[in-house]
Length: 470
Image (cartoon, rainbow, N blue to C red; front, side, top):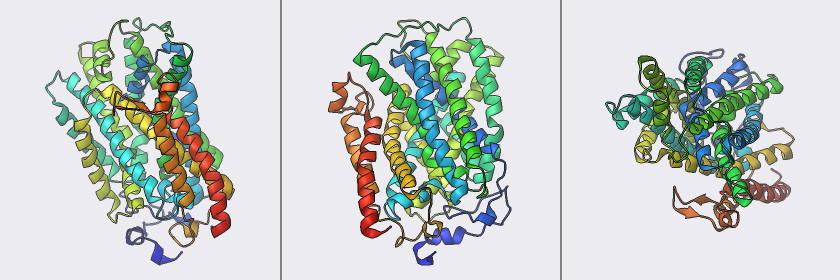
C-alpha cells in the first residue's frame, strides 16, 4: 500500500494491541490485519442485529400499516416479504467483513473510487443522524407519556442520547458486548405488551384497498419496511471486520439474516396487532401513547413503559458508532470516539425538530433511506459480481489503483433522480413525483432507484474497466 494515499487519521489509528477484544477501541476506518482479528463469537452478529431491532421504533413501524388499508394479514405478508429482501442484502454484505477486514464505507471505494466513495459515506452519515433523531424522538415521547408530562421531551432526549454515547464511544467490542444481552429484557417487555393486549386485537381487520390502490399500498408500506431493515446494509461489515479471515461465510450470513429478520418480523407484527385494537374511527396516535393507553396505570405497566423507552438505546448505539466511521470515510481527520459524540449532538438537535407528527416523519424518513440505499446496494452487489468476489485489499486506500468511480457516481445520482419521479412525500416534505400519480399515489421511489442504478452501472462500469483497467 502506498502510504501517501492513506489519511493521517488512518495511519495514526493503526496499532491496536493484537488480541484485544475488550476495552476502548482506538482504531478507525483502517483495515484490520488478519493477525489482529480475534472476534470468534460469531453469534454476536445475530444478537447485535436482534438487539438493535428490539426497540419501540420497530413496533412503531408495524403500526404504520394503519395507513396502508392492507388489513392485518395483508400487512403481515408485506412485513415478511420486504424484511426478507432487505435481510438478504445485509447478511451478504456482513460476509465481506471477515473476508476484507474493512468497514462498509471503505469497501465502497472498490466501486466508487477513493474520492467518489465520499458521496455514499456522506449520505450514510446524514442518514445516521436522521434515523437516530427520529428514533430518539419516539423514545423521548414515550418517556414524556410515561411521566404524564413531568419529564419534558427535551429532557427525555438528553437522557437517551447520553446513555447511547456512553456505549458507542468505546467502539466495536463494547458495542457487541452490550448488544449480546440487550435483546433479552426487551423481548420480555414486548411479550408483556403483547399479552396485555390480548382480547383487544382484531386479526380479522379487513383489507380496504383493491386494484391500483392495493398496489400502491403494498409498495409504500413495503418500501417503509424495506427501508428500515436495509438501513443496516451500509453498516454491515462494520460489525464483522474483526472476525478471522477464515470465518465461514455461511455462518456469518445465517447469523446476520436471522438477527435482522427475527426481531423485525416479530415486533412489526406486534405493531400491526396494536393498531387493530383501535376503534375504526380512531386516528393513529404515536406509538408511545398507543402502548400507554393499552397497558393503563399500575406499577408494572409503568416499569414496562419506562424500559421500552430506554430500549431505543440498543438501536442508536450501532448507528452512532458507524456514523463516526462514515465521517472518517468522508475524509474528516478526527478520532472516532470524538465523532460519536459529535454525531450524538447533531441528532439531538434534529430530534427537537421532528418531534411533531412522529408517525409521518418515521414513514417519510424510512422511505428516503430506501431510495439511496437501494441504489447503493445495487451498485456494490454488481461490483462484487464483476470482481467475482476478489478485492485487491492492499489498494483500498490507494487512489491511483482504485476505480475512477465515475460509473458508480453517475449510477447513484441517476438512480436518485429517477426515484424522485416516483416519490410521494406530500405529508412530510410536500413533494409528489409525477409517476406516483400514475400508480394511485404509490411511493415507488425505492424500486425505481434500484432498477435505474442497476441498468446504468453495469455497462458504465464495464466500459470504465476496459478503458482504465481498474
